[in-house]
Image 1 (cartoon, rainbow, N blue to C red):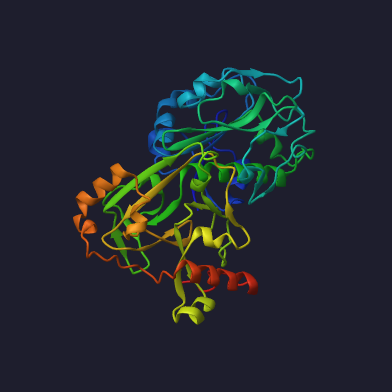
Image 2 (tube, rainbow, N blue to C red):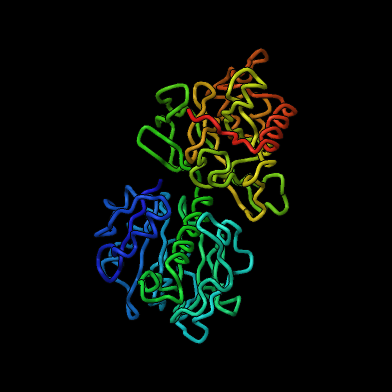
Length: 415
């Protein structure tokens, strides 16, 4: 569950009509009265509407620096804008480079952009297609030129012209920005039946989903849920062995142009695919990253109900697959004094295991740093101790096959 602030540029605070989009997605809605550093500090996302056709809110403009800083530090910024004119002046980072035009010549025709990720078009809140947002009274209020999108941007919706982008997302520091020329505040009203409330829920929920997988996984800590990229050495993380353990080391590696390196593509574990409603939201992990299975099937095979199984083996199950729509991903490695089971998006998952094969996944420069902190890892007689049973690859495959054959959840037993 994320903390999502909601704010209207015209009202100087959130609108009641914004709350449903947030709570329908299972998140906590927080009314933002001033988008300054103090109120943004506790937010995972800020959801902004601009109901004005003639300007941007003065209060919002006065706090652009604070908003920019918050996004760089990991907050998501979601903007639905009616004014559109000069939108480049209100967007953080490289958003200032966009070419945007307020235009109504094809405003009732909203299509899915070429290359929009499947997690946006087929998200947990339903399907978005070329007809979903057509027919509303000015479904969009203009467009951004495709060629002017910031580096790393993903076009999500267009007008009938595929070069006229209605909605897109792009990274800024540790956070992300979503911008749309759709007046979503207008379509939350009950008297605008051309675009239904359910379709707005789908748009907002799928928008949140696509932004979440680009910004990282939510980890359960002593201070509550925190994005993995915000964790620092010394932070106390909840562990399955009891209580909390401090992070001793953390590193990350970015994988780009995954079409040329498909083996680096992440495995997507969709919400609920493990069973018992877990994970709570889609979870992206590397292929060899292991998830904790808790089931009677595991108990019959290994004499204990828990076993760690690599994500690539779990792809034999419904709702778990290699996500070929992802072209860039950042993998994080977290190390404690010993191998631990942590909670990621509500599901039990491993920390970095310091066995020789696992260490190969750590980039060379980071591995040098790790060995400087833990020189024993390089000793010939060093043996890593796992937090739970790790079956052989063959037995992992058999375990997952038995679950698939009997339609049994791999998280059949909750801790």
